[in-house]
Amino acid sequence: MLQELKEAYGFIFEDELIEEINSVGKLQFKAQGKKIIEIGEYVKMMPLLIEGAIKIMREDKDGDELLLYFLERGDTCAMTLSCCLGQTKSEIRAVAERDTKLILIPIEKMEEWISKYKSWRDFVFASYQARLTEMLDTIDTIAFMNMDQRLMKYLEDKAKINQNEIIAVTHQQIAYDLHTSRVVISRLLKKLELDGKIKLQRNSIEIMAL
Amino acid sequence: MLQELKEAYGFIFEDELIEEINSVGKLQFKAQGKKIIEIGEYVKMMPLLIEGAIKIMREDKDGDELLLYFLERGDTCAMTLSCCLGQTKSEIRAVAERDTKLILIPIEKMEEWISKYKSWRDFVFASYQARLTEMLDTIDTIAFMNMDQRLMKYLEDKAKINQNEIIAVTHQQIAYDLHTSRVVISRLLKKLELDGKIKLQRNSIEIMAL
DNA sequence: AGTCTTCTGTAACCCTTGTTACTGTATAAG
DNA sequence: CTTATACAGTAACAAGGGTTACAGAAGACT
Image 1 (cartoon, rainbow over the protein chains, first blue to last red):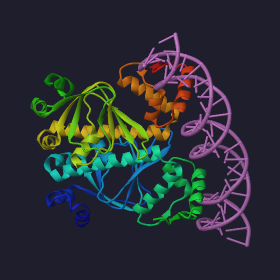
Image 2: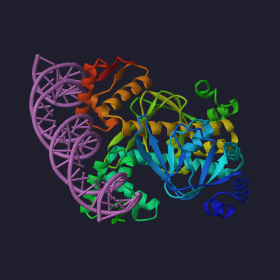
Image 3: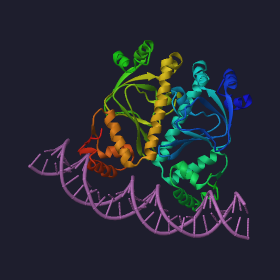
Image 4: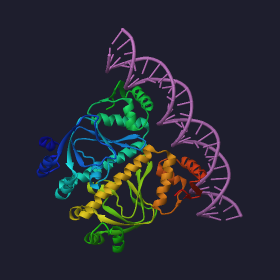
């Protein structure tokens, strides 16, 4: 674990902190598609992403959902983080977008380190800032863009996070992520294909315009 | 200034910190409707809200805008805060919703206090958390609610923040805040009036259902 | 090979929201 | 008082996106 930890966080955290993380953190694997945290659950550990990618979803009482953003190596979940500090329930749902390795830190440690390590404090602040920026971006997307633009952005983001211009996803799954219906997605995808921006196959989509 | 400072923040900050804020902070007044910060401006001071209310707006390149949330006494702007720490330009626009009194803190101090005062650190974290929660709420609103529901929520929020069930606002202003057109707002307002939820006058709206 | 299930394509229709245009009315300015 | 201006009401139409329904295609299973 130490080696991977250094690769992902070595350039921000001093050796002493890396050692501490290594000794108290628990390494965990999540296979692609597995839930990491559910809305309403109490958060008892804070995750540091070592490898893979996680998608963060919002959900309302009727079960409608919406993709907020993706997390990658070197990221942590500011939502979880804020839940830890506030001792409140999770406001979001996290699902492994790829096979994922993460390290779980007990809350007490994360609070202790805030006073002890400047690099940790900076990291926590930077995470908050990054997440606020992502949220603003999400708001821009749903407030100012039409569904066809949102769809294209979604495909590009997803290709980037999975490091593959061929995306393995069904129309129904996209519809869930964008909070719309399958028929709408199929319709718009067909239009994008006619425009030469993507190629459609069963269970996958290839992006041409990257 | 000291007295007001104590009233608004005395129960969170220790006396020593209050004294420091009092000595380095600059008291400023903003009349209702005045801009406090513009998108793209560099943020050199961090504001603490002493009295009044501020509305935080997002704006895209075409000049389309959208209300994000309101700030009240005891709040600070986490966006500004994150800009301070990151030395970046403002992502948002802030406008005085009522006549407002605020104290401006130089960035250096705010960083210094983070290591010096635990209460300040906690305050900064709590602000981030509060703003993340507000952003989630905003996303819920625009993603999951129809315009009539958003409008009603807007009126209620605005009545609350102005502590008055009669809201002084034109249909056009509401349309800007909700990022829609005046005609749509007029139409929906009329429907709300027929349902007995509000009463319409020129330049003002009275909420019945509080 | 034959059957079942999942995924995709498409048509037809409806509702919500956005657009254009025109009217009347309250208020401000001259 | 008269005129100009900002605000509000309403109709008619357009467009985007959601809904229902059905059919064909690709795999999965026996």
